[in-house]
Amino acid sequence: MTETISQQTALRRIVDHGIESVLVPAKFERAGKRTWIRHETELFHLIALGFRYGTYAIEFGIVSPEATDFVWGHPAKRADFGDVVMHGTPSDIRRPAACERFELGEQDEPAKIDEIARLVAQDIGAVATWLGQFKTRRQYRDYLLENRDPNSWNRFIIPSPVLKLYIAAVLAVLDLDPAAVVLADEAEVALRPWKDRLNAERRRRLRAAIAAMNEAGAEDA
View 1 (cartoon, rainbow, N blue to C red):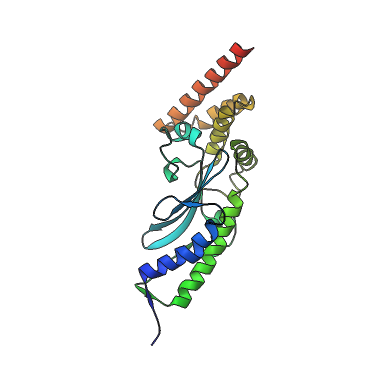
View 2 (cartoon, rainbow, N blue to C red; view 1 turned 90 degrees about the vertical axis):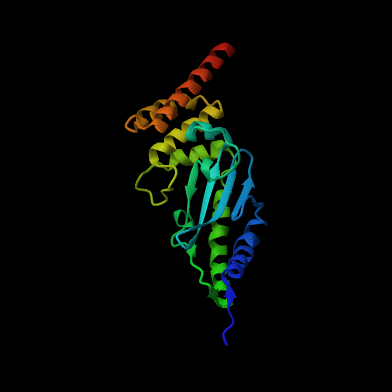
């Protein structure tokens, strides 16, 4: 008789051997039921195992707490996927992904689950290593500005090319970088076709921040 394990046991096995065995040494901490967070110099790295429509899927994100109000219109209460300035999946950074999605049956063979865990560990490791290049707002801003091509294969769900420019401008404002003025002007023009309330508020918040930044600069002169 073939040995089988329950879905709950299988999921726990995948989390233990395919996720936490990789993320704990990489300085991630559990931040929710199936979410892990790493605190960097100015940014938070998020990795989660989501569950939708019967499928488990790996996703990742970056949170800049100071940028949350600019981008989403609310203060950052905690680092979660509602605050991200980047959201993607392993296939956004490596193709093909080893196992960014999988399904579990009511009963599965341990060998199958161990293979899923092995492949998940490959994707989790690649994501954790790739996110490691972003420790500061400046590092992430430079990446955004270097990767605005809409035809690029690594197109994250967030941000779109226009939003990449806007987020880069926001990060420059937060760093009090003189480049923020030019970036804000470009973002203002790029966002004009987006007439919904959220993007109108984004433009307003960015203009106010630039005005405050210029006023502070004039006082210091």
